[in-house]
Image (tube, helix red, strand yellow):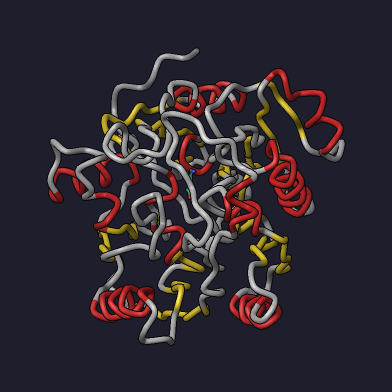
Length: 376
Ligand code: KQY
């Protein structure tokens, strides 16, 4: 495995691009653990395969699979999806994979964050997580990309970039003492600036109600373009999500991005509210060290947890009463991309959604061709 670069992306002229910028491809992992994915993960594997196939219509997809599952995954996935042996503790590539950064010449490198399973021994979701900790460097090795090792805990799902110097985060997650108890807000900002090249960090408050990641931004809000944000919205004053989304909206109205722009905010309706059923919970095999689940638990369902592929938007289908309306709304927001829905309840039951199980590798800008000088 390659040694990390000892400087930082910002110092070397690298920045975190927006997800809407061109990708080289997308990485995912294969779900297996029966304490998080019901019925021995079979329904989740079907859902993950459908996501991989939807994304593969737009860009190359690689799925990392535990060696014992390789043959099964290879059969379940279309031939155009690359399947590689890769050990992990679960299947959340957004959080355990690298965050790609690019420079002006089109070079691409990756940031390998510290990972502690969303809170370590203070409320984390499982123990151990040592195989997850190695996923980012393996991905970068396979991609042939140089690696920065960031000196703090951070997950890909807890940061969104506009590619022009603005970073969107939540206080609930980044300031949670179960991530970096030794660091305060200013120190975290300094590190985020160094590893993403952000110059403006926009702090929202709490993430989606009952989100077990401690409020990842990628379930609540994301950039759809520089200066434009999709925000999960709830109109029911009695629902706990109402105040969370309202507070986020007000903060966004007061904020400016790195270029001094105000944000245009698209309100995306909340599915449900959705809960885990007793039958779904009964399909799990409880295990020591893993957060248990019960029937009746509120699920952190959000349509904002979509993936932007090259020319596409892959959206979780979560609520038959709203799915068609949301797909139409997203098609209006992204007129030049094809919006595709994928049934995603089985992914939601595991604690996240399509954005959480995917991680793009940016393409970087192609080097400008030198203009030929005309002979005089
Ligand atoms: O949403 C994510 N980015 C990860 C969710 C992890 C859930 C683990 N059970």
